[in-house]
Length: 341
Image: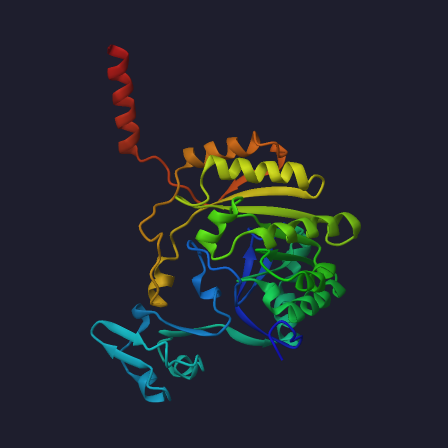
């Protein structure tokens, strides 16, 4: 049975509690493993593969080599340079991680049974009620495991919990039709408005994504649930962070998504995932990029507000790079010199 068809088990990357970034109120976000896009800037590279993956956290390693003795595939080598994982051999069985006394080896991705996952997330329902929060399924791309995702949200809805689907939109129409009836809201990414740029940076053009976005908007207009949509745009230097892109997205929202979108978030790039790529033995094209300055985010926010989209729904989120005291003093000095001239 495929992951998409399975309704009893799913591969889950992690469960994040007390989130305030994945929908209204305090939420528990369930991150599904596996993604249909391969974004060059991805902040969660461990979510792209649907298969469990091993990582080594060197600061926790005590050098006991227990992991080497239990690895059936001989996929591990420990030297002064650190742990080398032969990913061509590693099957992701997780036995080494289970036996590691220092918890230096971690298996990213775990198979969950439906009932167990439901029991796990409803532990937080006290926080949902007081904050207007709930449960968000994210990823990766949760519609890759649409059978499980739909029944999971259905089970939560039956228990009176607010539910949200966070999707990149690169999925089949059938997958959306399975999940949408049980989502109270949808968080939908629009990363790049230009199809060529979208393919360059994510591996796919955005034609299916935009078609699905229009489908979801029409679905919301004609059904009780979902009742609203949030649009999220990552602000990535050298990729999405251009006035042309933001203006184009805003024009699309204004022209096609009227009355459906209640929030458009401009999500600032962060570089805290550098170690994730290193632990997965993967290069990252954005490793040397710094946080975007607050002034630049403010500039793009103004562009969004003048794009035709409702300015009241536009918000900038995420950490930004503040001006340093040295830079401020230099600017003040230049202004003083300019004044004297």
